[in-house]
Image (tube, rainbow, N blue to C red):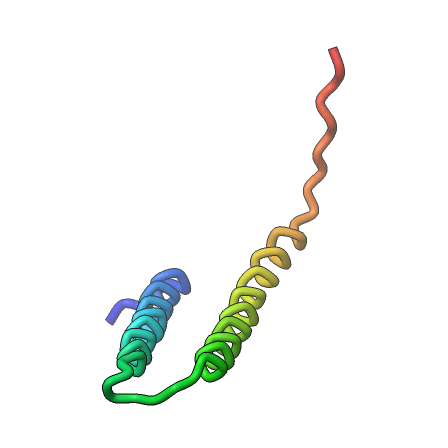
Amino acid sequence: MAVKSRRERFEDVAAKRAQNILDALDILGNCANRRNYEFYEEDVKYMFRLIDTHVKKVKDKFNDELNASSNSKNVVKFPKPKK
């Protein structure tokens, strides 16, 4: 059995987890059927505010990691000379 690279592991795990989230959102969308459920505008706003907040937190984690890795490289760059 070959050892997977960190990139391959990320692709496998992230794809499955992202698909699970998309599937869960589709299932949540089924609750929008007013013939089967009773809900109020405040309920919907609250629910999506929670979802949006959590998505932002996760995006921030990824962005923090991207910024940390790009900031950790000390590279000397000289400005281009003026002509």
